[in-house]
Image (cartoon, rainbow over all chains, first blue to last red; front, side, top):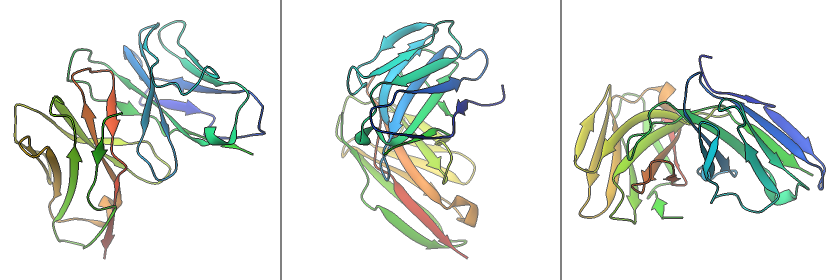
Length: 116
Length: 112
């Protein structure tokens, strides 16, 4: 597609519910990233895929967070037993070029999660 | 994560003036930096990047300056326009291309 597409754009969940956030990266982009952006803050790294391989998940805040990209294109970020502190905008980004240092990310508009 | 901070959380400028947004980073090993612009309800949008082997890079109406001695990065916007109103983030790459650290952002308000 023309850009990175994320859905849903807005999600309201009751505490304890599971949620799934979807990311459609730019076609052909090898790398895919998930970031979490709290209100008034900069994005914080969650996890990174190169094709279908999850190469870095060091930013996932707890084992309630799980991400997958089974076919190397669409990715899903799942949050189990949501808590209020999970409320944030979840940004997906993709990039074409791999390699140390040079990696411009194209971001989607994000999925805003509100946990009540 | 590493500390990437901004000196001014909010910057107000008159339309047509030049804007300067500053950013400090803490890790001297960082070798790649990007400035992003984020408008309300949208994801960050790439503006300009710079590698650590450069001290200046120019784009269309924007210039990024890198001072490795004091670990400081700045974004200069010439002839600021209302459409430049947004939050600006600097992002730091710690020689590991898959992880960027973002600052907390500076909000730029352009007054007509």
